Image (cartoon, rainbow, N blue to C red; front, side, top):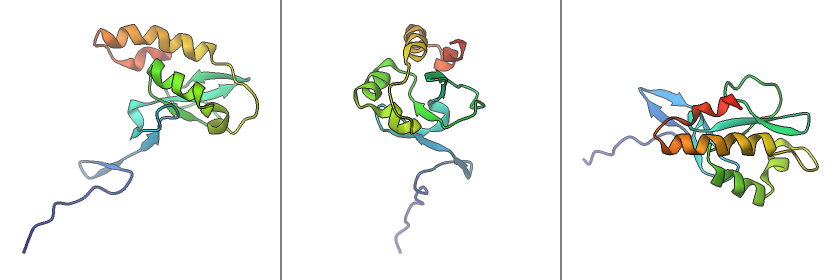
Length: 116
C-alpha cells in the first residue's frame, strides 16, 4: 500500500499542529500568514497602519511594500475592503511605507512601520 503524505488543511499552515491565521493582501491578492501582513484601519477618513491589531473598526491587510500599495490604489481596493464610499486618505500610509522600504533593504524587519 502506498503512503500518502499528510496534506495541509485548506487556508491554514501547520506549525506544530497549531493553526496559523491566514489573510489576503488587498494589493497583490496573495494569501499569506497574518504576521507577514500589516493591518490597516480607517480613522476619520484616513487609512492608518495598525501594527498591534488593536484599533477598532473593519481592518484590511497589506504587505508592507510600496508595490502592493500601488496595486491596491490602482485596483481601488481600499473602499471595497473597508466597505466605505468615497476616497480615503493614503498620505500617512504612503509615507510610512516609503520610510520603511529602505530599512527593509538593509535587512531589517518591516515591523518599524508602527512608527508612523
